[in-house]
Image 1 (tube, rainbow, N blue to C red):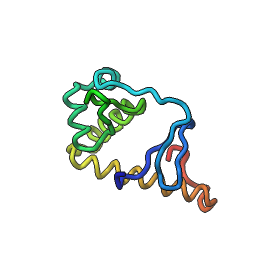
Image 2: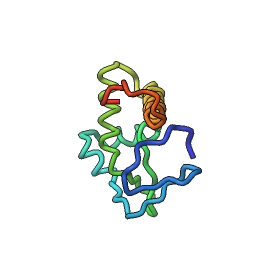
Image 3: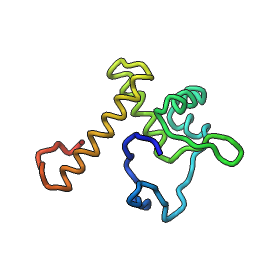
Image 4: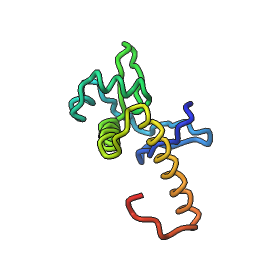
Amino acid sequence: MSDRPAKARPSHARTTEVGVRYAIVPVPRLSLETVARRSGLHPDLVRRFVALGLVDAVPDASGRLVFDPTAPAALARVQRLRTGLCLNYASLGLVLDLLDRISLLEAALRRAGMRSDLPPWT
């Protein structure tokens, strides 16, 4: 299990106390080609993002990369951050981890009822 903060879960997934996800319904997986086409990126660049840990993928039984349906949105986020902040791809991993951690902490504050002044986009 990685030390990256958990990502937003689809409503059909449940998490156990140790953080393992179990899908109640089958989650469709996307091929490398589909993710590249939907995100408008070259497949080699998508592979590089996987190697850098900027997007998650797992090999299927035949060794090809398969992605969660949220991968094109994650890749768009990477591209927006790179363009908007002029960061290199290696530093984007740190920024993504920090943003994920901030989201988790803000969600915990909301659940605890400690802050009601958070902007709706966080």
